[in-house]
Image (cartoon, rainbow, N blue to C red):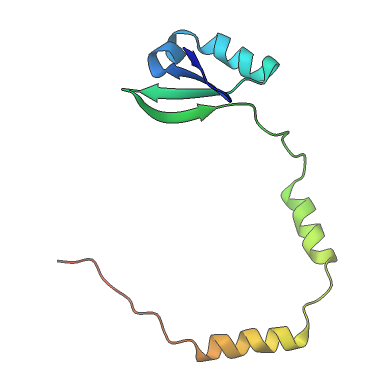
Length: 94
């Protein structure tokens, strides 16, 4: 293991052998780890942000509480859509 300014670098093998200890250090000491395999960085392991308790229902209620869109804005969007050329459809090469 090597310690950098922001994270401890460990190999994937070291992580496999000490997963429980590494997870405890992440959880309780808020440490960050850079995981390397064959000398190449493949992942970063660190504490997560607090998980939000909001639900999809909360999101829908929030969107419904927003004021309606300005009619001029909706007209501009419709004009853009009407003048947009049809997308080309490409098939898979034979």
